[in-house]
Amino acid sequence: MWGWVFVLPALTYFAVFSFYPIFNAFWLSLHTKNPLSLRPPRFVGLRNYLDLLDSATFWNSWKATGLFTLGTAIPLVVLSLLLATIIVSRLNFQRFFQLAFYAPAVIPSVVAAAVWLLLLDPRGVANQWVNFVLGLSGVDHKWLANPEMVRFSTTVVYLWEKLGFFTIIFIAGLGGIPQSVKEAAHVDGAGGWQLYRYVTLPLLKPTTLLVSVMAMIFCMRTFATQYLFTQAGAPRESINVVTLSIYTTGIRDLQLGLANAMSIVLLLVMLVLSLLQFRLSGRGES
Amino acid sequence: MAAGSLRKRRAVAGAAVVRRTPLEVVVHALGWVVLVVALVLVLAPLVFMFIASFMPSREIMRMPFSWWPSSFFLDNFWQAIKGNDGKFIFPRAILNSVMVSSCVALTTVLFSALAGYGLTKLKFRGSNIVFVLILSTLMVPFETVMIPLYVVVTGMGLQNTYAGLIVPFLLSAFGVFLMRQSLLTFPDELLDASRIDGASEVGIFFRIVLPNMLPVMAVLGVLTFEQQWGNLIWPLLVVQAPELRTMPLYVVTFMEEKSTNEGAMVAVAALSSLPMLVIFFSLSRFFLKGANVFSAGKE
Image (cartoon, rainbow over all chains, first blue to last red; front, top):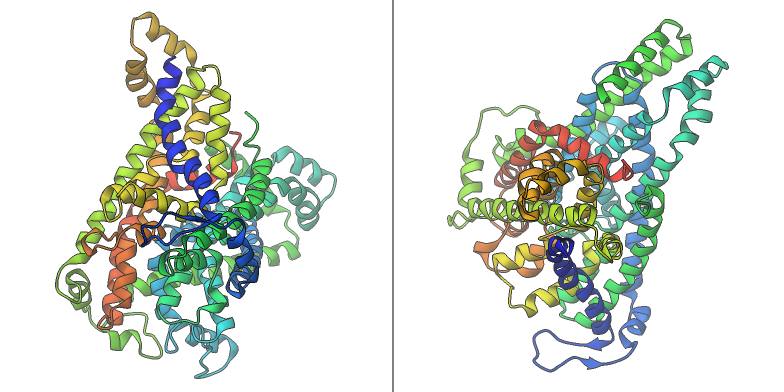
C-alpha cells in the first residue's frame, strides 16, 4: 500500500505530462486545428501525414537532420575515442584533460552559439586561423553565408560542445577493460598497436556501440545552434533541422495538426534508436 | 576503488615506459601533440569569450584578433546588465533561470527519490509494470513531445507563467531510473530495524533513506540544474512576456536587437556562462560521474 503512495506523484506526473501528450498528439495529428480559433479540431484522417509526404520542407528538414547527424556523430565518435585512448595512455594530467574537454558542455548551447557567431564572422578568428593553417591570406570562408558552410559550421559548434562528454564515457569504458586481459596479451607478445587493435577495441565494442547510438540521438535533438544561426540571418534551408521545422510549423505558422504529425514521425524514428540504446546499455535488465 | 585501479594502471603503464620501442616513443609523443592541439581548439572559444568581453567592439572585430585586451574595458558588462533599453532585464532573466532551474532540480530529486524508493523497497503488485512504464518515457526525447506538451500546458492556462516553465520538468524518468538503481543496493536491515523501532514509512524515507542517498541526489540535482539552465526550446514556446524570459531566451532576444554591439553580446555570454563554469569546476566529480551514469547503466 505504502508503495503506491510513494510512486503516486511520479505516476500522476508521467500520465499527465508524458502519456497524455503523446496520445493527444497522435489524436491531434489526425485533425486540423488553429490555436487562435475557437472552432474545435476537425477530423481529417491521415491528411496531415499525406501533406507531409508532399511537402518539400518536410523532406528537406529530414535531409538537414540526416546530414547533420551523420556528419557530426561519426567524427564525434572517432575523435572522442581517439582522445580517450590518448588520455588513458598518459601518466599525468588525465583529470585535467577530462575537465578541459568537458568544459564547453556546461556552457548553455545558445550562449555558445552566440559566441561562435563572432568567431565565424567574416572578420573573426575562424577565418584567421584557417587561413593561417592553409597558408592563405584574407580569404573569407563564408561560415555563416554559404548554405553548405553553415551546415558545416553547426557541425563544428556541436562537435566542440559534445566532444568531452563522449570522451569521458570512452575513458570509463577503457578503464573497465580488465588489466589482466591486456597483460596476458602482452605476455603473448602483442605489441602496442596489436594490443589495441585485437584486444582493446573488441572489448570496447559495447561502449562504442552505445556511444554511437547516443551521439546520433543527441544530434537529432539539436535545436539551439540552428535556431540562433537562422535568427542571426544565416541561410535557413540547409540547417532547417526537424526540431526547428516543428517549431516553425507549430508555433510560428500555427499549424498544430501538421506540427503534431511531424512530432509523431520524429518520435517513431527516435524510438527505434532509443530501443537500440536500451539494448546496448543493458538498462532493460534489472 | 577508483583510486586503487588508477594506481595499478599507472604502475603497469610505468613499467611499460622501460621497454618502449622507438616507434612507441614517437607514437607517445604524437599523442601529446594531438592532445595539445585539441586542447587549444577546445579552449580557444572559451578564452575568446572572456577576453573579448573586456574589449570594445572595434577591438573584438579587429584583424588579427589580439588575444589580450589593450585595456580592461568594463562598459560591455554595464551595457549587458542594463540592456539596450536600460530596463535591466538581463539580471531578471538570470534570476528567473536560477529560480526555474533550482525548482526543477529540487522537485526532480525529491520525487525521483520517492518513486525510486517505492519501486525498490516497498514493492507492490504491479510495481514492475509501473517501472517499465516510467522507463519507457526515457525513449521519448523532449523535442518530440514539445508541441503536444505545449498544447497541454496552454490548455491548463499556464502560458506566460512560472508554473508553465517548471511544470513539464517536475520529474524525469532518468531520475527515477537513477534513484532506483542506487536504492537496489540499500541495506534492507536498516529499514527493518527502524520499522521495529516504530518509525513510520514517511519518517524512514526522510530520516534514513534520504540522508544516505546524498551523493546520488547531488549528481542528479547538478545534472538537472545544468540541463534547465541551458533550456531554450521550452521557454521559447511558453513565454512571451519580457519579465518571464529565462537567460537562454534573453540571449536570443538580445542578439536580435539592432542596437546590440559585439562587446555587450560577448559580455552577456560570459556572464551567463560563468555560474555554470564555477559550479562545474567546484563540483567536477559530480559532472564526470554524471556523464558515466549514462553508460554504466548496470552499475
